[in-house]
Length: 67
Picture 1 (cartoon, rainbow, N blue to C red):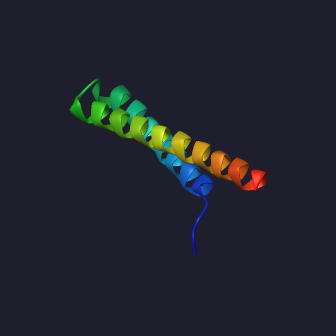
Picture 2 (cartoon, rainbow, N blue to C red; picture 1 turned 45 degrees about the vertical axis):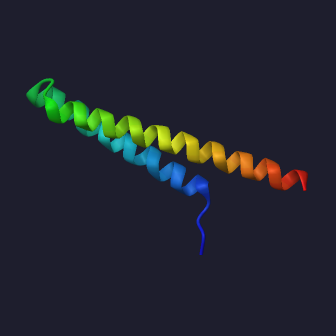
């Protein structure tokens, strides 16, 4: 069974929020170290993927309405 890109998009945004939370906690505890930058990079990639998936969902939905 195929899932909607909206579900994947929300999942990626949720992962981005978790990575952002962990990055903030890490910076508060240890300062700006290598691991904090890795967490921020992962959060950025997840948010970007989430927005792209949600955008894809609406483009598919719009295309299906025109048919």
